[in-house]
Image 1 (cartoon, rainbow, N blue to C red):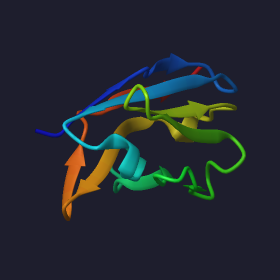
Image 2: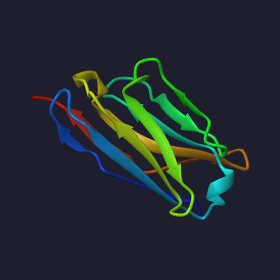
Image 3: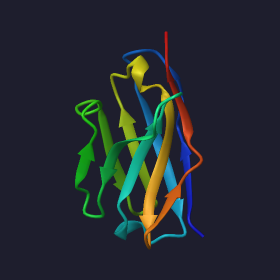
Image 4: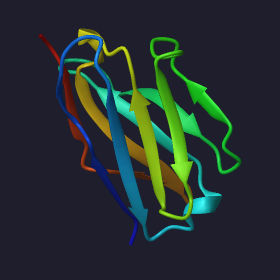
Amino acid sequence: QVQLVESGGGLVQPGGSLRLSCAASGITFSRDAMNWYRQAPGKQRELVASITSGTNTNYADSVKGRFTISRDNAKNTVYLQMNSLKPEDTAVYYCHTIISYMNHWGQGTQVTVSS
């Protein structure tokens, strides 16, 4: 059974940093691409960052230069380092992967950027 468990969200002031973690189980983690999505109130869920099994990365334009996705295959964990946070980064952040054409999501972690 695939499980994705996010952690690391919270309240941070504008300009601050947070690191999100997503611990995966039930998958061959090292072979799978991993993604971070986010959904703000009243908005559609959007792709924030992706990392392939070969550690190639891709970012939404809105977070380029501020966010970094990485993975630790020994720990079955993917990270999202978020720097220079803005109020518009406020959202629920979700870990995501596709296994055998099926989407798998974590429960989400709330990130709030506010003074």
